[in-house]
Amino acid sequence: MVYEWLNERLDLERFKKKYLTKVFPVHATYFFGEIALFSFVILVLTGIYLLFSYIPSSRLIEVGGKKIPIAYHSILLINSQPFGLIMRYVHHWAAHIMIAALILHMMRVYFSGTFKKPREINWLVGMLLLNIAILAGFTGYSLPFDMLSVVATGIGYQIANSIPYIGPAIAKFVFAGDFPAPGSIPRLYMYHVVLIPMVLMATIGLHMLIMVKQKHSQPYQNKDIAKSGKILGIPLFPQQISLMMFVFFFTLSVLFFLASFLPVHNVEYFGPPTLQTPMVKPDWYLLWIYGIIKLIPGSWVIPLGANASISPEVIGGIILPGVVMTIIAIVPFLYREKEPLNYWEPASLRPIGTSAGVAFIVMFIALSVTGYQAELNIPITVCRIYTLVLPAIAFFITYFIIKRKKVEN
Image (cartoon, rainbow, N blue to C red; front, top):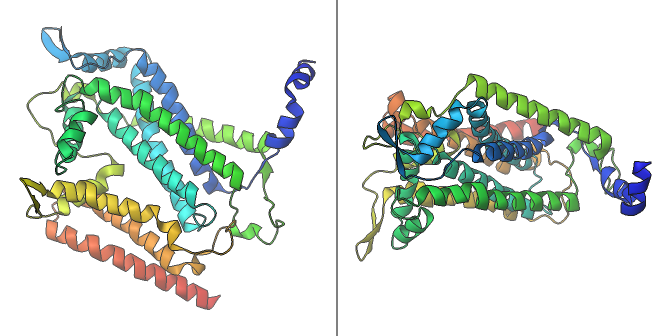
C-alpha cells in the first residue's frame, strides 16, 4: 500500500528499472574501491563523533598545575569517554585502510590495462582522489597537538617554507603563520573537517558518475561470453547490494579489530609540545618520500641567485615526488588506442608497461626501507645502490617471465 502510494508520486518503478537493475561484474578486486568508499563513510561518522568533544585551539590552559594546549586537553577528555578512545583509533585506521584500498584499486586498474581509452579521465580523478586522501591524513595528524604531531607537522611546514621565493608566503598562508602559530590548529582543523571532506565527496561523486557513464571494465574471460556492449555480472539489487553490505560490515569489523589490538599515537606518552624533538617517521604512505630525502646528499644545493636556492629538502620532498606522481598520472596518454578498451588486457600484451609497474612498486618499497636506514644500520651508499638496482632487476625479471610465457602459449 505504502509502496503503491510512493510509486504513484515518485515513479519508483522507473527508478528501479533504470538504476537498480544496473549490472556489476563479479571479481574480488572490484571491492578495493568499495572498501575505500566505506572507509571514507566510517571516517565521516567517527569524525562527527570526535567533533563533539574536540576543541581546535593551541591556547594554553592550566590543568593539574600544568599549562597544556586546549586541543591536547580535549584529546585527553575524548580518551576518557566510554567510546572515545576506540573511536579515535577506528578513525585513525579507517584513514590508513582508505589510502591502502585506493592504492590497491589503482594497481588493479593499472595492471589490468583499464586506465586506457576511454578511462583516462577517471585515472586522473583517481590520482587526485588518492592525493587528497593523503592530504587529509596529513592535516588530521596535527590535530592532537602533542609533541609528536607538532614535530611531524613542522617537518611539512619546513619543506614548504624552503621552496625558493614563494615558499615562505605559501607556508605562512597554509599554516596561518610560522608553525606552530596561534592560528595553525584552527586553520588545519578547517582543512581537515570542512574543505578536504567536501573536495573528497565531490571527487568520489565525479569518479562514480564517470564509472556509471562508461560502465565497468570486465575481466578478460568475459570477452568471449558477454555480447558486445553488454556487462556480464549481477544486478545492483539485491545481489550487489548484499555483497556491498557484507563488505561494509567486514571493513567495519576489521577496523574495530585493529583499533582494539593495535593502538596508535598515544598522546599521553608523548605529552604536550616541548622544546624536545622526538624521532619522527611519517606514516607508511609517505615513508617513500622520507626515503628520497635521506638519499639526497646535503651538498645538492642549486643556487638561484638573490639569496635563493633549491635545497635538498625541496628536491627530495617536492620535486622528485612530483616527478614520480606526474609520470604515474600521464601513463594513459603514453598509449594510443584506436578502440576503447572495455576488458582487462593480458599482461603479455603490455610487457614493458607491466614490468615498469612492478619496478615502480619495488622502488617504493626500497625507498620505504631507506626511511629506516638508521634503525637498520644500513650505509646510505648501500641504500642509494639498491634503490637504483632493485627496480631495474625487477623490471628485467618481470619482462623475461612475460616474454617466456608468451612464447610457451
